[in-house]
Length: 408
Image (cartoon, rainbow, N blue to C red):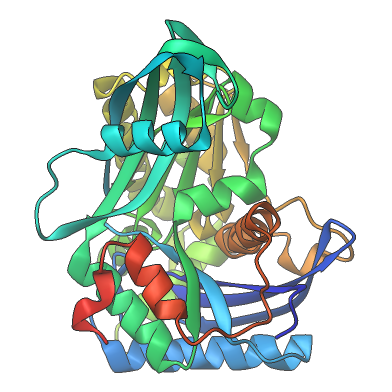
């Protein structure tokens, strides 16, 4: 795997997606994509190791075949109801001298010195802003003079067991991990503009098993959360309401579904198979809206209430971007605008060169984002991506505070 090649692995509840990008003169071209139904996850959490490993292998093989290169290491996403995040602050004295890199590390460490349950570990410590002698809004204080340095950070934590199981599955599929990335953080790289992040925007990743939210303002993340409801709940509602198999309900949702009943023609009718699959019934298409709209409205309402509760709604000045596979459902943006009362747009992957039509769908936002995240990190840290280091797991273990002790 040459150093200019970067691979992302989106381990979702509905699908596993492996994506390969090639860096060319500071531009990234997607040269390989592989997808396979996700068998072994529920609400973003691994519930069957072997099935998940097999799905990962299939997706990676397809991406390797399309790209013509072997994938050894990946950036992989993490989500699920076990993810929790919070903001924290830290402060250190400077004694009237310039801020050094060591000072920055010390103040971030001070902000990270919070009590975390033993069954949880830190996934990300994301700096929001630095404050030097009361002057806030500083993104990089290196070289500034003062007597007091403060920092505000956003800390993302996850259940140790859930993270370990993801790593175990990727490892058993024959892959190393460069980093584990919060999926909304990855998706933000693919669908949000720097201007939106600066002004203030909310990203809602409407997936199959979970709906993840992240709020950005001043070019930094201010809030994030995971709701254990998603597009699969809509499918299950349709299956029960229409008395049809889950597989048929999923097809009907994709082809005929709409999140706003008022947008469906009154004369439209569809054919629905019975549980046995032998007989079909003709029903008004508006019935789909009657089932889908309350569930999607519930999901958005829960997110809205959470944003208000955590005072994150006040940061959202540029509107809300909805991405993820379920964002492709007709009427989603219209219903979201009704619930949130803000401008809404559906987020499609961007920031790539070459022919991107084949991945220009919200369902690929996280996978594309993982590649973009990897490219940015590689550039910042000047890593050599092609070298398969023997101690790669120990490096990741150290960053994740010994996550993998029970694995290796």
